[in-house]
Image 1 (cartoon, rainbow, N blue to C red):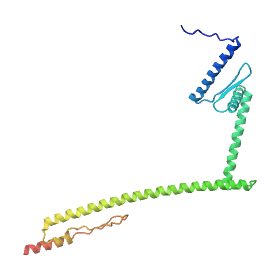
Image 2: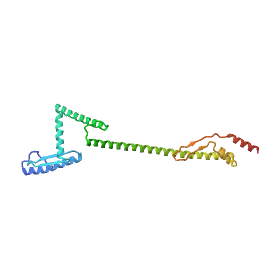
Image 3: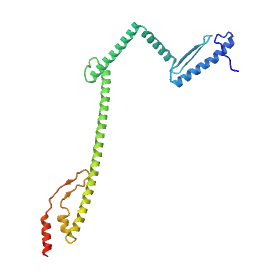
Length: 235
């Protein structure tokens, strides 16, 4: 059979009442601890027994919990009262106004203004703040310059690689031209062909690391070919 419902009323027997209090107190404390851990809640529990003995639990600090409770309670009461709510917002506005004024004074002091009334300690603190700001600015500037140098170095390497590829293509074109002229004129005039006809458009390639390729073009001389052809026919 199931357990019957317990009537919730004061237990007359003092011994039974004390046993029930001990059991239920431990259960409540356990539930409070689990609630604080599982839900990341700030929990404060205060229990006074019938004999006046105090039992408490707090996952942070009972003082901070009670202070937060009193503050929240006062704010809630003030929000329900129009006059108190107006005073609350006026007080918040005054705090924000004072913070703005302090920030403006601090900004003017950092800009080298309104030093009147500052002692040696205040001026030393201001000097330390300025030095820290300067160090931070210099570090940021150096980092930007390093990034730019690395970017330029990377671009230079890419241009150098492109120059090498172009140089290889030029050499390949030279070899193809040499083969074509050998087939056209034979091997007996290969030296003349090499000097006059193999490279009618002369290329000057700089092989330095970061130097660009310089191309110089010179017009071919077709008259030499005609004179050589006429000499061969006469023979």
